[in-house]
Length: 104
Image 1 (spheres, one colour):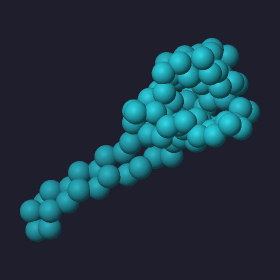
Image 2 (cartoon, one colour):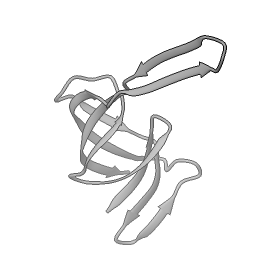
Image 3 (cartoon, helix red, strand yellow):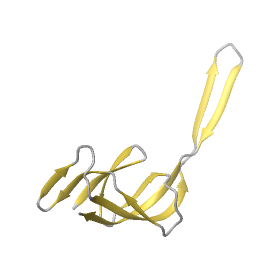
Image 4 (cartoon, one colour):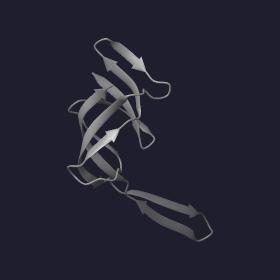
C-alpha cells in the first residue's frame, strides 16, 4: 500500500517505513506528525483518487531531525554599471519516517 501526500506545496509518494525529506515542519525529533492531505491511495483492492483530497485517510510520520540543505549562491550584476550583489540561501528541511497509513 502506498499514498501520495501533499506537504509544503510538493507531492510525495510514500509507503510505510519510507524516510523522506520535506520542507520544514515544526517539531522536535521524536514527535509524531499527522498529514491529512492524501491525494491518492493505492491498496490491494485498487486505487482511490481524491478530488482534491481523500476524506478520512491520514499518514502518520515521526520526525527524525531538522537539517539544512546545501548553500545556493545567487549573484546579480549589471555590466558596466558597477552593480554586484551576492546572496546565499540554505533551505531548511525536516526528515520524516512514515509510520502508518490509516484509512477510515
